[in-house]
Length: 430
Image 1 (cartoon, rainbow, N blue to C red):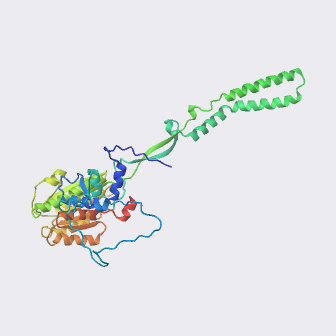
Image 2: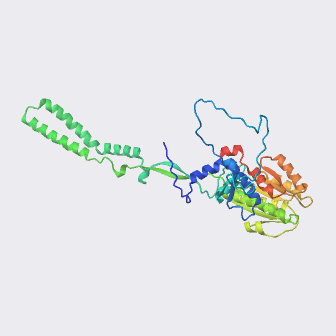
Image 3: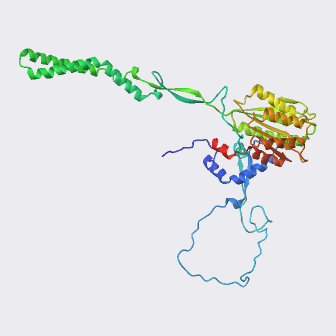
C-alpha cells in the first residue's frame, strides 16, 4: 500500500486538499462565474482572481435526525381553517428570511449566499479548462531540451547508486577462479597422493611424507582463502546516456487588421481575443513562439507591445499579411520541425479583388503547412467578400481551417472555447 503525504505550504487556516475538493464539487457555478468575468473585464485585469457566489440552495447539506421508532398510532386533531383541496398562498417577503430579500422584521432567520475568492492561478485554470491547440503532433526538433535516459551497458567506473551487483559478483567469482586455479590444481594432486599414501603408509619415510603432505594441504587451503572475495577490479556500474526526446514545438501567428474600416470598438474586441489567446498559449505550452503581424495596406511583424497598443492605421489589403506570414514560415519555421498555427481577426472589409488573392495564397502556400488556421470576423453587419471566400476554404479543409463570427464582447469567450476546445481524439493522444 502507498501513502501520499502532501507537504505543500498552505495559507493560514487553509487546506489545499480540501480546497481542490471544494472547487471540483462546485465546478459548474465557478465556470459560469468565470465566463461572465472574462466578458466583463478589461485587458489589464484578465489574469487576476475572481469572487465567486454560490446560492445557498446549492450548498445545502443532507442531515440525519433521530425520529420516533417502532410502531405506534397517532391521532391528529382537525382544524377549522382548511379543508382538503384548499390552496395555500405563498408567504410574502419581509418575514426576515435572510439572503437580503424583504424589509426589516423582528422575526425569522435564514442564510446568506456563500461567497469566496479564487486565486489568479485557479481563475486561469477555469478559463482554459479543456482547451488545446488542435492537431498538435510531435516532430524532430533542433535545440532539443527534452531528454530521456537510456541504458547503455555497463562500465568499470561509476557512482555507488548505479552499481550492478550481478555483474560485479560474476566478475569476482571469475577472478577468484583464475587467481586460485594453480593452487586448486596443486591441492587436488596433493590430496590424491595423501589418500593413496594413507593406504600404504608403513615405513617411517612414508609416515614422514604423510605429515609433509598434511602441511602442504593446509598451506594451499590458506593460500586459496587469502584470495580477495571482492576487489575494486570486479565492480561494474550501469551506464546511462541522454537520448534526445521528440517534443511538441509550435508557433502561433497572430494577424490583426488595423485598417481604417476597423473602428476602435472593433479593434478592442480583436485585442481582447488575442490577449485571451496569448495567455492561453503562454500558460499551457512551454515551447511556443508567437509572431505578431499588423496590417492595413501593408503588413509588418511587430512586438507584443506594438501589436496591442500601436495606433497606426490605413487602407485594407489583407493579402499583405498572408504573404508576410508565408515568408516568415519559409525563413524561420520549417513545417518539418514546427507545428504552425494562425489566428486572423478582421471586420471582413477588403480592397476590391484582394479577397481572391487571399484565397489563392491560402490554398497554394499556407493551408498545407499549418496545423490549424482560425479566422474571426468582428462585425454586426452582413458578411463581405472575405468571409464568402474563406467559406470555400473551410469547406475544402474542415479540419485545418475554422471561422467564426463575433458581434460584441460577449461573444469572445464562447467563440474562443469553441475554436480551441480539446477534441476527443486529441485528449486520448495527450
